Length: 209
Image (tube, rainbow, N blue to C red; front, top):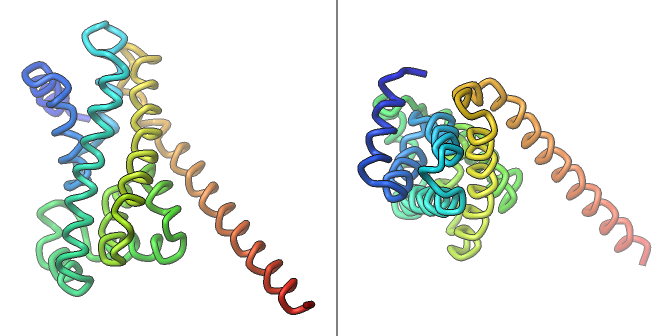
């Protein structure tokens, strides 16, 4: 984490307040290398200091998450899989992303469907790119917005809350992000196992009738 980045984030929030947070998180969703792991805990520290409201921070950052996700959803729906892959193959290096990152997001969506839109909001890189296969699949827009908002609110609340709890040590949150990611992946695996188990039980019941 660089002090320059912290300075930039602080300057934007000081100048624009909650709107600045919304813009930063929207950009973080479109350009994943911008780290929410810095923006959100820093906002949480400001909540502890009394300069920001937790509720308004959560609303602003969740709104920003949804706006950023809708941009990528629109790109997926508009351009299609081939042109999206071409773009990241040719220009992905400019935003530190690769075609393989898009393929990973598509694989997550193909495997877990709507649940991936919710749970993947809590995984780095995939958190943003999961919106692309949702757009490619033309997933119901109200459902997409609802799942994106719910997953984003949970992630944002966790990181803002961590920054609030840690106070001046807010920048140590990054050390624990990996643990949170494993929890999310485990939840997805359990969800998949439960889904397969249900399908097998339904198939057996149908076969015995």
